[in-house]
Image (tube, rainbow, N blue to C red; front, side, top):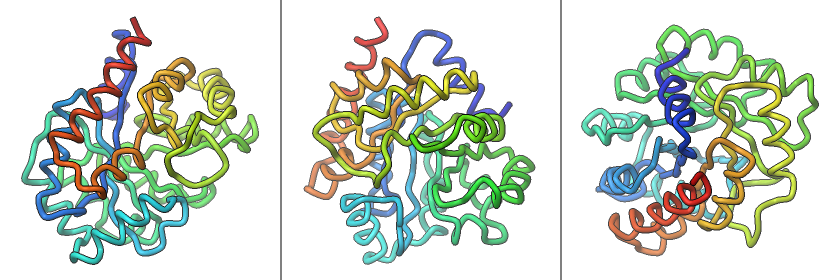
Length: 257
């Protein structure tokens, strides 16, 4: 069991719903100030996006954030160097696309930066073996994804091979803020929790504290990305982002009580 999974399991088993906000790395020069504010506001882990020029699973908000980071010269190496210089007290999970993740030495860079996990949303299960072996050897947790369209047998395979947690994509679509939680979210989380004891996170479209609490009824935790990044893009300060994350934390704690 990876260090990330042990930590998430311990928190879950203590009765706390898990919260993993998302932040695009390199979005502004002092972007790690947002990282610290998110952690201080009660996040159990933070997903750090490494910007990519063709983010096929990301909706308009994350695409805009990636473009902004790339325009100011952000690179994976630079972002990881920034991470190596901070300790926010919670695990960091990198997310990016296969074109970056499959490069020689990439997992070693993540490990040197203190990253605990990795999400590669466009990597099919049939092609994930080499990266699974590399991440296992470096102590990284490669978290795999399932969607509402994933068949039962494949869900079991993905859950068995995933490390750290399993990422449940709540709907068939891209990331982004939505008015309500997809009806498919609770069903998918229930199917996953029948297939594995690993922590199950729901993501995609969770935008408000109320939606986070609703999602946490079915899953062990939630991932909130576009709602955080829209505020950053609109000029929110680290303190303001921390205040928003605190509302998510409060909603999850109230649901668990």
